Image (cartoon, rainbow, N blue to C red):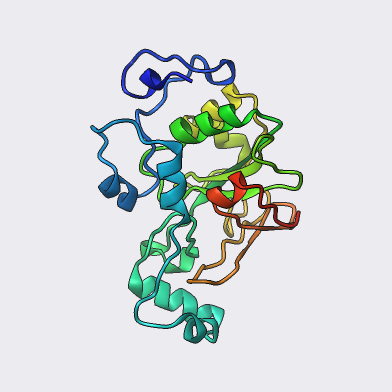
Amino acid sequence: MNNSAFNGSEIALSKPLAGLELPITVSPSKDFRETFDRESEPVTFGQVAKFLSVPFRDEGMTAEEFSKLTPEDKRKRDGVAGHWLPGRARSSEDLISNYSHSYFVFDVLDWRREEFEELIRICLIPDAFAVIMHSLRGHTPDNPRVRIIYPLFTPISLSEAYLAQPKVPELLCHLGLSGRVVGERLSEVDRSLELPNVSCDEDYWFRTIEGTPIFADTILEMLSGGVGPH
């Protein structure tokens, strides 16, 4: 892999990623942008993994106290705290002006580890407030099997995905990845996507469009071979 691809206009990538116009550095959240300077050396995969794996800490409440709250109270507390961290989701009810989001979901299967790391380093879309990843059954460090979810910021249907939101779907389509758009309480979207809130030391689950729960691993856990139920 040629790191020059990340700090200049000349793209020198492995075959699956060749020909893409890609951002210089990954930037999944405001906190990430403040942590890593865009003008500095290219962000390494290890830096991204470490940043995304940092758990949310609620300084005003212990994990035990938080676990006793009802889901509604947890959402209200998150809404007041205003936390927007990678891997941490909030329902549309918590969003200002009741703004709903759609999500583009795709699976990376049977890629070489180097190709997967390259994908993570350059394809996390800048200014996305969350990029959620889950390992799928059979995942190993050398044979990544991972589901990735991007926020699309504008509610759209599957048929509109490649027209209204070309930035994400075109990237994924170019890579030959099958994807689908899902959303929250939107009649024009295939089915609803449930994104539960996450607290410190609390296991959390993600409901896919098919309704199958997948344990939400961190990137570091995925690379170490951790596998959740699928």
